[in-house]
Length: 65
Image: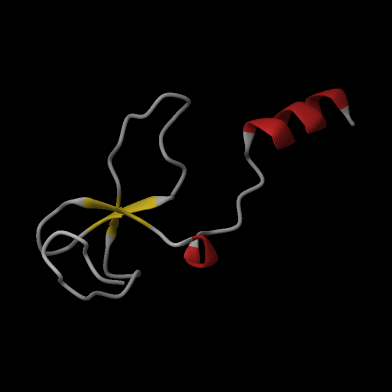
């Protein structure tokens, strides 16, 4: 990945998770922190972890739809 602010190129595994306090419990792993400047960067969709904890999936499992 490459930071949009400072241009630092880094491996996704080197970056720490975003420390956001977004509504509904955070960004869910969609952002990482640049190891050089510390800005939060969105992770491309193809690199994001597969997550079935979306609100829609939680509702489906609650109501067994």
